[in-house]
Image 1: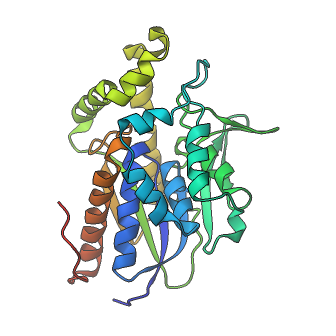
Image 2: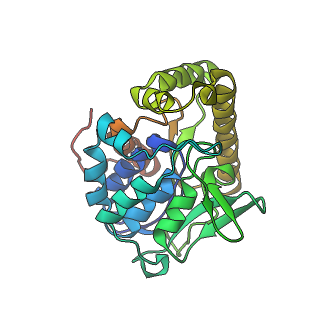
Length: 295
């Protein structure tokens, strides 16, 4: 294996499951790869953007320090009928660690994917404000406030392209590596239903629910909305994989972790590291550099 082989890295959407991207990136670098370009959607856009800005280590340390109380303090809950959380506090906290900058000034090519509801189209950010791109890409419909411009209403890119394999910049001889944290599970919907039930019982989610009128979170329609969104993401990601097959795929089933498990960042990141190590080993069919075993 070439110690400095280049990687075009693609990171999927997936809420808190996206913390696995941190571990996956760390493992790639530890194994001697060079990430030469990166594309991401939603949480993948956030983690990818922090890496492209050269500040993933600092951001990861902050994320790993978050407990439930700190996470709730970052949620600027809104009584709007279109969203639950504004999202300004999270972006402000990140910008204190990594000041905003132009995407075109980043050391490696980077892009983030969002969806424009007004024109029913995919929007790819490969220039302009890094945080405008991230803020647009992470705006989960009905949960986080959409980003409004004069001509667009921008929401989570998972709606249109949760695994943007066709958007990452390629260079000759590189490896196309994808980390999909919203993979389908063979146990079908039964395990996903249990995962959703646990998610609704999560203390963080309870705090959000208690801060708003009860009728906003009627279990019937909200459960249906979440399940529909999950299925859409899975199917769109599967289509992306068929149209643009990656050289290496790290696939983490959607029910492995909850989308709101933001207080388990370090644990989820370790899982991403392990899965990336396994994928690399399988691809090269030979022992890789030794690394500290993760539990």
